[in-house]
Length: 184
Length: 88
Image (cartoon, rainbow over all chains, first blue to last red; front, side):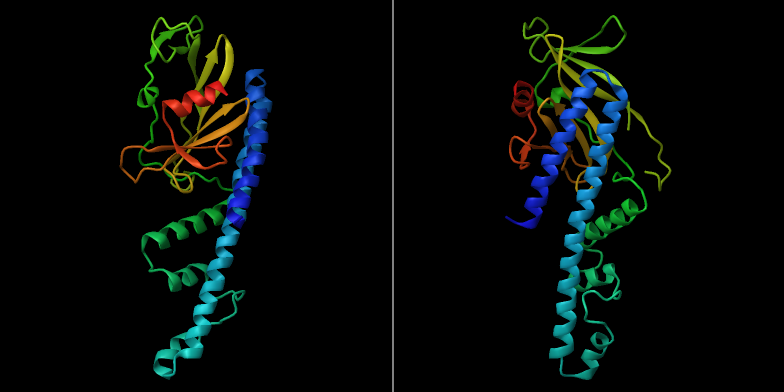
């Protein structure tokens, strides 16, 4: 099993544990506990992202270091080799900086480069206490209709938006949907 | 969002009841998360299924579900998937 798959599995086990408790707390209307379990899940997300990124960072350091060593060893002409000679070949060296190492392996500005550079920025933001969400410029939307449900909205006695079940307005399955406000 | 001074916004959470019993909660989690355009979580008594929009930017949303029942592998989120979660 690959390390990423293994980490993914461990992440899932911990997330499920917290999620079950978050759900139970909501069911019992224990708002503070629900919030606390949600926070634990969020921190677990951050921790595993950092854990996985560290693995990726190690891989990029190793590959870039091998490339530098190879160029320093195999290029015979000094004019070609000189730009490589000034780079430290040790994978644990502070320089080249991470994004420069990345640019040795994939074209700067390419899709792969931008993806990894984006992960790197998030890694730094998380390290300074930031969140994992970025600026929105359009909202992704998901509607019950999009997965084949029909909603029959009717305000309930508490003034909440309630949608009668999925199937039809007279369906006996007794499923209904309730909309609550939440801060994102 | 903090970097671009985008403030928090109120969105709706969806609760699904069956016979008066809460069976699932759908919670919006975030926009432009790592690797996706946005994330919603579906919480049930068995844990969480994570829904992410994997569409290309400015394309029609493509919701994919990652859950514990399928070993965290992805599957297209559709009615069958949703009903499956409610009936577990």
